[in-house]
Every structure is written in C-alpha cells, then in structure tokens.
Length: 95
Image (cartoon, rainbow, N blue to C red):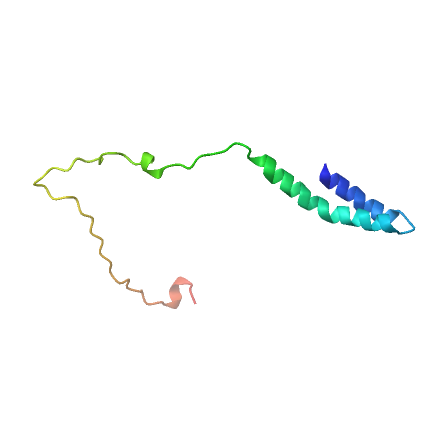
C-alpha cells in the first residue's frame, strides 16, 4: 500500500503545476516512504520470540559403538600420493 502511495506522489509531483511547496512535500514523501515500508515489514515479519538452541542436546550422551578394553580403537588412515600427469598428445583432441 505504501508503494502505491509513493507512485501516486511521484505522479502528482510531476503532473501538478505550477510547482510550489507541495512539490517538495510530494517528493519528500516519495523518498521517505520506502524506508518506512521496509521498517514496518521487518518489524511485523517475526513477532514470536525464539530461544537459543543448545547444540549439546542434539549430541548423543553415549558413543554409538561401545569401547571394549583390550581392543584397539578403530583408526582411519589417509595416505596421499602425488598425482602422475599423463603426457599430452594431439591425438585425443586437446590442444
């Protein structure tokens, strides 16, 4: 609704002649109305208060796999090797 009033202010600012103090009022309204519309939209968007979530509640209290004394714990090993580049030749279409 406020944007419709803004467009009307723009049109009236240009159409109404002779230009006078009301031209400045309509121009000022056309400049200020978008700010007011955005503030009102942001205030009314989320009225309900939300509490902060505790991330520890989502974590399980016990491990998913029970640890048995005397057994080694599972270990992931990642080894990196240097990539070997193929020599480029002109037969496969690449320049």
